[in-house]
Structures are given as C-alpha cells and as structure tokens.
Image (tube, rainbow over all chains, first blue to last red):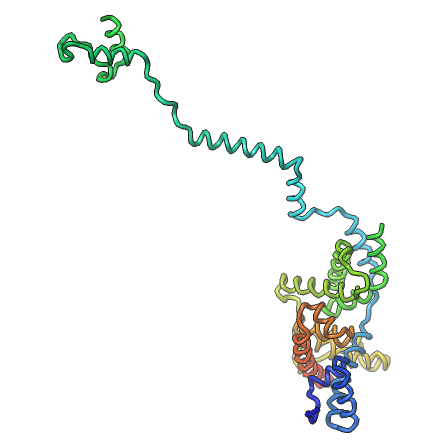
Length: 164
Length: 177
C-alpha cells in the first residue's frame, strides 16, 4: 500500500464495511497507530451513531389504520387500467364483429364518397336520327331531318324522325 | 388465498420498518401513512414478481423510494421542510420548559432535534442515501438497487450527503447551545 493515510471517503467505506478485506485490514492497523486518522474516523462513526440514536428516538409502530386502509383498498374492485380495457375490447368475440362492421362501414363510406354517376345511356332514337341525318340526300335542305345531336330537344327530334 | 396471506405476512413482519422508513423520508406522518399504504398495495398486486430468497425489505424500500420521488415530482418539492436559520430560536423535545423535562427526554431532544432538522435540510436524494446506508444498514450494492444507480454513484452521493449533514448538524447544535 503506497498511501500514507486513508482518504475521508475510505474512512466512510471502512465504517460501512464496504472495503475489500486487504484494504480494510490496512485501515484497521493504520487507525491503531495514527491519531489524526483515528480522530477523523471517530467523527464519521459518531455521525452515524447520532443518526441511529435519532432514528431510535423517533421509532414508530405500524399504525393499525394503515393496515386497515390497505385491506380495504385491496378488497375494493379497482378500475382496470387502460391497457386492460383495451385488451378486453380486443378479444376475438368482440373484435371480429366490430372489425366486420368497420369494414362494411368503410366500404359504404368510400363507395358513397367516390360515387361516379352511371354512364349516360344513349337511347335507340339517337342512332335512328343519326342514321337518318347521314343518309339524307340533302342534309342541309329545308326539309332535311335535323340531326338529333344538333338539337337540345331530343324528344322533338325523335318525333320528327319517327314521323318521316 | 395465497396472495392475501403474503400481504398479511409482509405487513406483520415489515410494516413497522417500512412505515418508519417512509416517515424518515417524508418527515411527516400523513405522507408516511399514504406512502406505506400505497407501497403495500403495490406489493399485493405484484406479489408474484417477488423472488423468494431475495430481500423483501430492499424490494419494498425500492417501491417506497420510487413512490416518494413520484410524489415529490408531482408536488414539485412543495412539502419539503424549510431549513431553519441558525439564529432562529429552537424549541427542543416536547416544547415544555427544560426545567420540567426529565433528563432522558432532554438528552433525546437535545440530540434528536438538530439531527432531525439537519436531515430535513438534505435533498430527498441525499436523505434516501443516508437513511439507507447509516440507519437501515444496507450495503452500497443494495442501495444502488433500491435507488436505481451504480455503486460508484452511491459512494459519491453518500460522501456529499454526509458532508452536508455534518455541516447542518453542527450549525443546529451550535444554535441550540
């Protein structure tokens, strides 16, 4: 051991029995022959003794009302923590119908959101009129049928074409 | 019921130590009662996690220490006692005039009061370490496990805490004489 005197930290560790055996033995023998270190050690030991005496002086019994409150608290049904409620909610018997309902709702929701209007139907009269217009000998003559595609009134054109 | 029997045994065997440790940490009875109650409720709920052959006291002290820290954080250290000024008049023991106090009570009060005030003057962290090392007699390894730090940190915190404690005890002793 190259040290001449133990440090204050070592004295506290010696007091608490925290040093390895060889170091402990060295301090033990050092204290026997060094009055200043012995005095410093006594100061540390007396602080610990003071703390223990203080602890003994204010020692209290376990209050019976605390034991009663503990018994009462453990018998009271406690509110399950959030994760436990979540786990209950995710049991297959609950989760599967819920998941199915969510899928259906999502499908219907998405479907109505992205609803594209049905393709415009073209009725047969259109083709008849169109054909009549294309096959007319003088399409721009006064009595030529007005192609349905150029009129806004389909019904009138239909009637005209049918009449001819 | 096995769980219930475990709790009853724990309260009977360690209730007093746990309550006293909680009292020394909090420095007041209502908080010590709440802390002890909550600690035993946690023990009851987590009883299966206790490993037979390990120290029950270390386990419950760890619970108490953590609960105390949570409570301090919640209250932001509000209920920590003020450090009295050295020149403040001190009233020791039961508060009766010294002439009518029995001598043992006077000695207890004389020694105990400055120590009590000095302990109250430490930070919660320092107080934990001093109580565990010097009063409860745990090893540094056990203290590290209870408060959740390394042995090296225990060593350095303990050294600082004892230095601070010595200063405060001397100050309160002087002011009382």
